[in-house]
Length: 279
Image (spheres, rainbow, N blue to C red):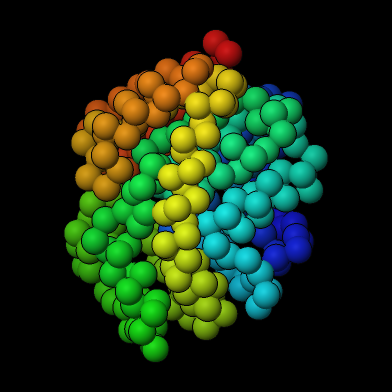
């Protein structure tokens, strides 16, 4: 994968190339850009898809020890990546991790032409769900995060309600999940980065609440694509966002949990391409 060096460290990313509309697709905690692989397969021929791997636990190269890996810090890292790659008029696509809302509300308008929010953290929903709250608690116990992450070696645990069972209705390929969890299991630097992020949960909730309210002033076209059966990101949050934002449209996607790119990639890709074409 190509890499770009930023002030916080090295970020890997996928770039499908091409001259079509540019999409920057962001993922959540303890996964990487491959969560978008099915959507990219649908859109890659007609759109330029850029899919970074953020330092949220599945990155293969640890960040610098002094890197700011709070929610705000990682949002700024996304902005730095966009600038470094010379991207303009992008469609920014969020799933699961809502930290990029902080970027949207602080970013110059010319950087982001459209916004797509698919089932992700918003308002006060940080950390979302029992598993995330337990991970935050483990991050404050000496050695606790190391012990908690060791459970991810067991494939049946990954599909439990405490891990990914409430995030996707359909089993994610074992080799894909192996790649997601390998860095945090094998590299103490990656665990250090994840711990820094988790320990910032209180500030992240405050920052996200403030940023979500500031979306009232975001006047670019916005698509809210929310899983109607989501167990972690309340469907009402999708409706509230659509009512909050001046140029938002809402699409509720059936038969899916939070990870719509895994559960309903064709439906999501269709909604994305139609939204881009119409705006």
